[in-house]
Each structure stands twice: as C-alpha cells, then as structure tokens.
Length: 341
Image (tube, rainbow, N blue to C red; front, side, top):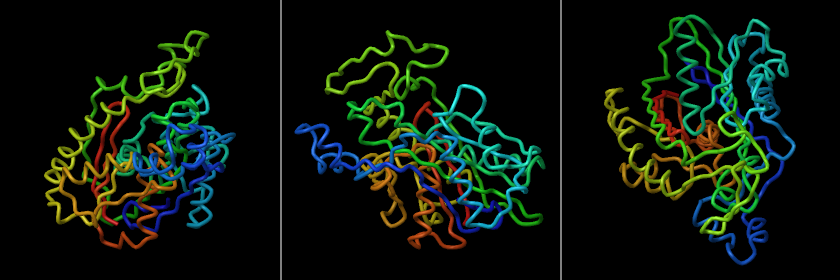
C-alpha cells in the first residue's frame, strides 16, 4: 500500500501467499464435524491464503517491491523501515534488517521490528508520524506481515478456520507545508489478557522441548500443543465488545468529531460475527462499515491496510473522506486513529 501521509495517494498492497485453503478443503479434512457452510456462517470466511515455504521477510519484501513498482517511488529515498510482525524469521537478527538488505534500501535507512498483532498497523502509523514530525525521517516504509498459520495445529478448528497469511506495504511521506492527515490517535493495553491469545512455548519463558510438543485434545475436540497458537475465543470476544465501543467514543471526542463526520469505519478484520456485533453495539450504519475477509481470513496486523486498499478499489473511499481505523486483539492491545484520505 502506497499512502502519502500529507498528500494521500492511491494505496498499493500485495497479498502474497500462494496456497489457498478453502472451506471445502477444511470440510474434507474435518469430515462430518464441520461443513463449508457452517464454517462460513461462524467466521464469514470462505478461503484463506497460507504461507507454506514463504517466510515473513519474503512476503514483506515482495509487498514492498510491488509498492515501488506500481508507485514509481524510488527505493533510495526510504529513510526508515518499520516492520510489524509476530512471526519473525528469527529471534535475532530483526527481520527488518533482513528486508532492508533484500530490498536494497540505503544503509543510512533506520530499521526495526515491532511485535504487535491486530493493533499493529495503527501503532505503525503513529510511529511513522512521530519519526516524520520529529524530523528524523521523511519517507517511512511500513510493512505489516504475518505468517500466523505456521503456529497453528492442523487439527485445531478454533483458529485454523479464521487465520490467513499476508503482507501489506504502506508508504508514509511528508511534504513541507502541507497539513498532516494522520491522527488523532488513541491507544490501550491490558496485559491481563495475554494468555487468551498466545503461543505458549518457543521463546525464553518456555523453550520448546519434548514436553511442550505433547499434543492434547480440548473439550471441543481441537488438538494442539504448547508450541501452537491458542485462542480463548469467548474471552477475546468479550474483551472486544467491552473495549472497542469506548475506544470509538473516546477517539471521536479527542478528534472533536461526531459519528456523522466519519465516512468509513475500517476495523481489524477479526471475523464477521465479531464485527457485526461491534457495528450493532456502536450503532454504525452498515454503509459506513467495511467488511473484507471472505477470501483472505484474519491476517492480523495486515487486515486494516488490506481492507483500505479493497475499499478504495470498490469506490468506498474518496478524496477528502475521513476514516476511523481501529485495531484490537492479542496483548490485549488496541489502538485507533482518524485519517483523511
């Protein structure tokens, strides 16, 4: 996605995983327990892209290459690279350093990873805006990329039907004298919910071992080990319904705007049931609320920029429109901002 901070350009993004996993494929694997219609009704997702051999750095680099190719923006002008992921290539070095080399960006370019999930794109915009406002950068490349499916046990229906893999590239630039069109921002964190969306084993708190690889079956028949992704769906749902409406209200107050002033609400594309529940509770008109996950699934930090690109292609975003972006989930972490197209 190519999006100028102060002069909003058309965005470019790439969704790069090769394997497409459909509900029909899952229904065959799960035999009679779940059919494709039941999966769609529960999630609002018909298919999701899966990274098999692709790494996070490869997806990120290909997204960025597409941005440069389609926008014509020269690589040598990038002076900061931000990479948001929770599925890095390695514990160290940072994946952003690897991508800097893959893209051939200047060695004078700053680069770092930040580990955030569903709120990551909004946090990335805030970091980019801060770097530009502080005079530390002029052209920031923000990459949001996940290969969450590599954490998922193939027999865990609770998460396998939801998540997909993908990458988005966003260019944030500053032109002297123009008003900034990114912000106001609002952030929140509640680490008490950390265990409700987690890969328990693999890092320093619980290194992988034969014991962490032991597979268990939960009450719903899902199979996973401590090496796999675990999500407590009901708790995540309750957290979302509790925190997001207040976030929307507080963000409007901070920006001195009303609901009527927002042309389109683009939330983290978690699943259709959750988003429909949020839209209903907040009272957002259906025509002002964007849903975009049928053929992608939940791509974590990449969902919001992917949705923005698709909304633009569909004519749902026009120059001068005000958008509210809200990310929420793993952490718990949440963030919202107002942008003008």
